[in-house]
Length: 131
Image (cartoon, rainbow, N blue to C red):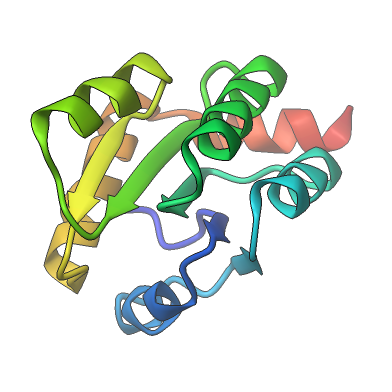
């Protein structure tokens, strides 16, 4: 797992201590989808964690992020998972879904998947930042 990845947290302040415990320090927090898009446009992020926004807001957020950067990695955090939610999240473009409790182990596993899918992501972010 690359500890230099930049994380955007949307509506999930409780996750920051977990990320810090696994030596992830480049973390930006927002409360809603509108603020998240504003941050996303201003700077590149490796992974976005989104914790249960209203369905329309969540869908618009994921769609906007993927329109800006089709390879962006989005993980949905949910308190309760069910097959309908799972299907909806995946159809909206989410790469991963984590349910409570949000532990360091679960986060590491999800970030390891990110590293597998996007091994050159840090180079892509540098290019995006330069443009």
